[in-house]
Image (tube, rainbow, N blue to C red; front, side, top):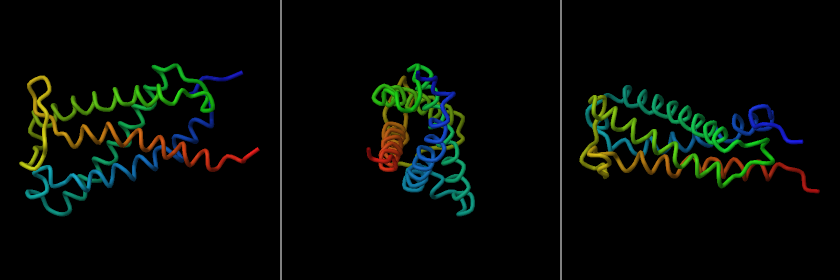
Length: 159
């Protein structure tokens, strides 16, 4: 008999030991590489830039965790062995970018940060949204999930 995902220790071990480390590493690299696309790159001190990369990466990990948990809830997933992986990924592809659009709108509207002239943008609902953060949430969580799953399968004993 299968159990709900939130009661399955294997799910929590998978998330904590496999998914989140991959997600953190991928987002750290992305945050560092996209720095020139924001004005912080030319306007802030090295210490503040380092803090911003750390802060944003930590936020990315929390958003990635929340999008996975919400996808599992919305998909009514069971234990890890019964996950419907495509459904989980599709739901994450809806949740992460939706939050990103809101967050980018909020943060650029309140002038907490701004894009440099190098940032490609899309106009969504009358607001310029950076293409880089949108791509970040379309690419990195599914990649982290697939890498985590690959590592998990590699560790399983073969019958």
